[in-house]
Image (cartoon, rainbow, N blue to C red; front, side, top):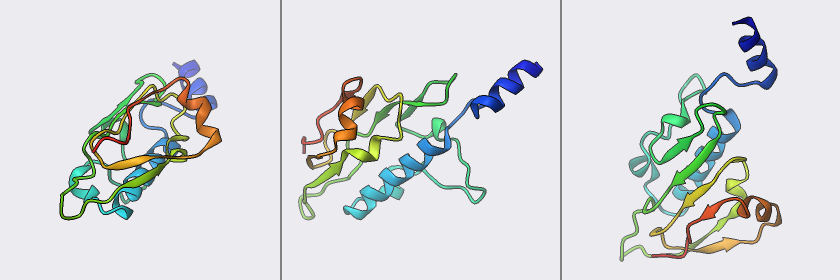
Length: 137
């Protein structure tokens, strides 16, 4: 048992959500808000708790590796709640997804995103990730 505790302390993780990835999810939610989405309504479980910790692996639309705590899948289809009266296309800065080191699947369709902004750092992540096209409206 002591070996497990010591290894967890050395690696900085004892299961659950990783802090950097939790912050990354909250930054993406802020991005949605800044582009006109009612993200509090559409992603109600994505909240920052007063003690600065919430289990993002339990948030809706998020799948994590239960051993490492890394986010492996984000299913963010139709989270922008696009209406015809307020239709505007925005571009996603791919660096929003850099915190997710083990992301394998990203679905962003039906959000009226116009595409990606350039980000060289994301090219490496994109080679191991299944990216759903963000351009579907």
